[in-house]
Length: 391
Image (tube, rainbow, N blue to C red):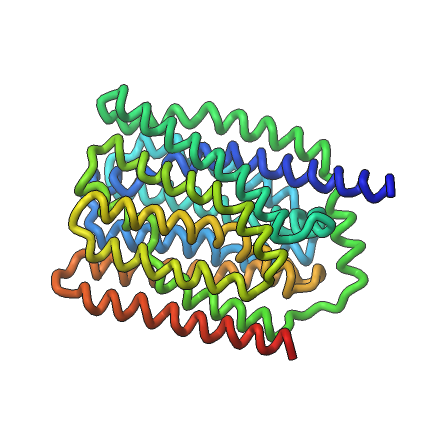
């Protein structure tokens, strides 16, 4: 019993360490993401361009994981990808030196590339060391800590913009301080749990390589859910028409705060109810998408942001947990890569479509039909997963 408690304690410690790394990372990139849409607009980008850059960034951030996830399964160089991925966060402070939206877009995409490199390796390690804790709870705890950084980051950016009279360059350069802290703490974490790859390798050798049918059905369900969900960049773009520059990051801070508050609860619920719990974020995804398109005042956009935060909190915790539950350890890097690639393509499509809806007058009804139909298909696929798993 004492040995089991010790093993559980080590699992929690590892989860918290990884969560703290993500906390520092989120201070940097989540802090800037709340400002990027308005910054791109300031540099001359239209809603369509902002939507495409946001969607392309998410596409790179997820699709490249197909390669990094495959390599993680093949060569087991988890920490190499983790260090490279977090290292690219230096592109965020460099945003302050961009004077056109094209240059700014390059830095935004480099940050997303870094996320693509590090995430599969991090999630593989988390899914293994957190097995005793429960996959939902593991990713819920990690997301909670992750989102603390996502709250602190936008707060730093908001205060900087307010006190510096909207000095974008200074605001981005301030984020160099948490970057140095991040890389220092990441080195400490590596020294503490850097041998985790041995646990993964031993577990993988006992399993056959391959992905079950339920994994692909689940991935398709999430694709339909995501193409029907408006990206946060466009919610913030719409908010910029109703709020002062320094208040736009506050709206994003609110989204991250709601995300953090729901993540752990969602993780517990997933461990208890399983895949059927996913129906809740699928249904809630309809609300922010419709409200952002049809909203004509600040209150409606705030309500849209609130519901988006609820959906995001569940996406970031239980969606990843579900992948770990339907994919064996031996193929889990590939599973996260395939899942993330599909997820990224969905963001690209969503950004372009909803950007079009916001730019072109008279498309509100089409947007409503689109939001409802995509989530309906997602729910049908989710129900099919339940039928397969219960058969």
